[in-house]
Image (cartoon, rainbow, N blue to C red; front, side):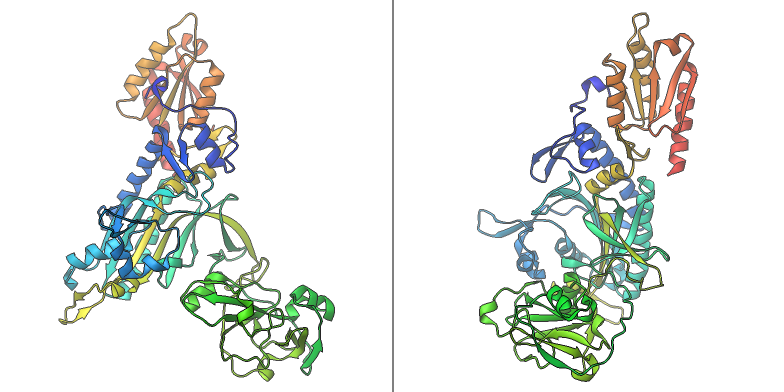
Length: 570
């Protein structure tokens, strides 16, 4: 590629709309241009990085017997109605009508399409297991697009779907995919990506993991143990609570006028918030009665954990006038539970001498003993982990980090195959429902993540495996030599084997070097008058780990050796 012909302006100024490092450099380097909120055009440098990433993904998916397919971007609404997601997924799913008034959706994920294909093609146990995958455009109408390619509305994703006749077979394949994903991130030059336990959300299923690049710009909170390496998304993270010693006392009803917050109550009684019990009230989708969650006063309810238990979306309860609950004073002691559903967090198990609501305005109870004063209770984990809490696996302390999700894998079970009536004939002649796994990687996010992980103050430092070009030739201006002609000669020879971009513009050295930094090409050849008069050229890597003068006639062999070394570092 001749830089003089490359479409896309590069500029020094930081774009006002860009906050993340990757967004800044993708705009400054001429990689992407915004079309609308969350919609971007990719120019040649970004497209070349994207193609290189996709090549690695394909190779690793093919190694584990993946079969590449391509599903439609636009899908009939009836498929999503079959799975129940046409109604259950919110406004992020773009719904529309065709000219015959039939429902259509823009695919944001393709579980329904995968089952639709597989149920017509895999009717015998002899055809199992198998995995199909695609690299396809998706659309998700995000309410808050941000960070350039980190959170967009239209994006490219590799999504794969495996089908199995037993949970044991799914478990084995799930592990294969996990290892394949680790290899993908290694080969694309971002081994910093870590695998964490996660919540499956609207995808469904019982077991899921996310692959996260730890970065300050990340939207997800990752809970990390400083001792044993435990990692989990905040949505599913657990931790051990330190024991709180409390003297057992008799339960007593106390007048607490206008004290309807945990902070007010703790201050009034002269105790810390961990000595209190609080209630959180929610609406449950498609349910009329409110959901009341009791939890220790110093903790917060984890919405994802609750939704997994009730198997429905929940939102804060606001219909106060049509409810008999004494909001601000709700407690479990002598509570009328006829018209409510109640959940107890495990933080309350065996607790004594708690302060809780009195189920009457301006009253609280003190001295609540969970075992003595309440009937048999089933406790569940619905609390958010607190920083500094003990690790569930050891005595280490939990800390919080930010992460960018660049991939996920799910054990879907029969969530889709059952409801969409997909079956096969087993070896005993009986009809069975296959078990599914699902595996996704966001290609655009991986582009952004590579920049977040590898950059300096001047631009990206692309890993050799995904760089838009492997070699960048800078031909500096000279009054006594035709350096462009020498550059063209080297460009022609190297281009026979390597991806090369040649700055043939005759621009000032500062301009050439600034553009080269923004393009982030791993190997740079600098052709200057002084060195060329001595028969030498300069070679420097973008990460500054290699810098040397070599004879002009040795350029090809030296470049080949450096590229091999960079590839071996991955």
